[in-house]
Length: 203
Length: 203
Image 1 (cartoon, chains in turn blue, green):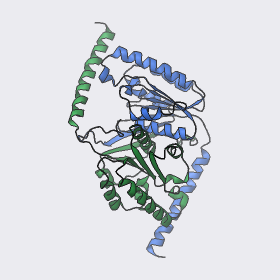
Image 2 (tube, chains in turn blue, green):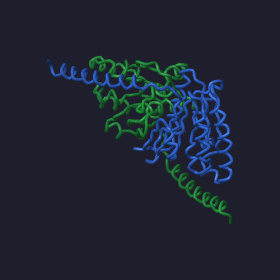
Image 3 (tube, one colour):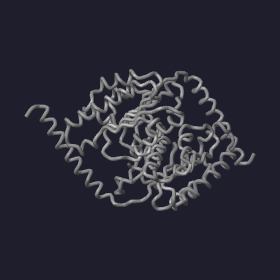
Image 4 (cartoon, helix red, strand yellow):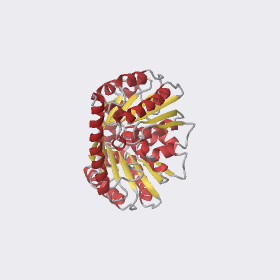
């Protein structure tokens, strides 16, 4: 057997074992219900990953809801794009910019409460398959919203509804309650190296 | 001063310092050019974050290209969704499923080369503002493609074109060449806990 053919044969054997393992895991995984996902950490991709899931869900014909708790000041590309589909995406920008732009804690609290009222409606709507609560973690971390009622509303949602919560500093109880938690870790960032925030990448 | 008013005042002072720091960083960041981003790690969100950026870029009126190197076997939600916009998104599914499904190394190599030919075209097209090379890292890791010519093509792209490379196990030289690198770290995963892969979340 040539060296290359041997390598191919080893590869095929290794992949066969891997396939068997993965098929078994899939067969074992039987529950089907809406998941609670949390995207946290200091890296990029927390919100954009949620918006990628939104595109994925729309591809499966689901109706979706979005509440942006903090980022609302700037009209982002995602908002412009997903507002093209008003029958499929219920899109709500509730925050008025980052808290360090507003400088007013009482107004931030009032705005966060209004945003949560909208989120509650989405979380009680059986026709909505995916709800994105973008930057909710920031509102929780600053104490603009209380964790207990927020978690209670999330847990009382329709059985098949997925929820994605994004933002740095996810509270421990939210991580505990979640099905899937991803920490986006910054390895290297162009912005830190002196590159301007880029349209289509950062906003 | 009441306890609550004091807390609000401290908050305002802290946020003012934060705003000053951030404004300064933005002023310092002057370059404007297309970025190379790498999404790696074992967590969820590598591909979906890239697809969120795609939505963002479309919201800014950019034309975009996608090459999926490995995942092509299953018709995913993203593909169904983004194929709605053929004038804006040039979408190419080149892989034929995970390597452990195909069990044939020589075919995987041939397919990866075909996929790279398509990627090269996108990477030389001035009208494309964002190119997603989905699961390219997997093709590199298995040696289906050689890193040096791949990197050379990426670095020869139009000045304002952004590129996102996804997949576990990004090679060190790619990380070195990238502007922004995010490691998606698995904290907790429903699939591992025995929950079936969910439509709109996992695929």
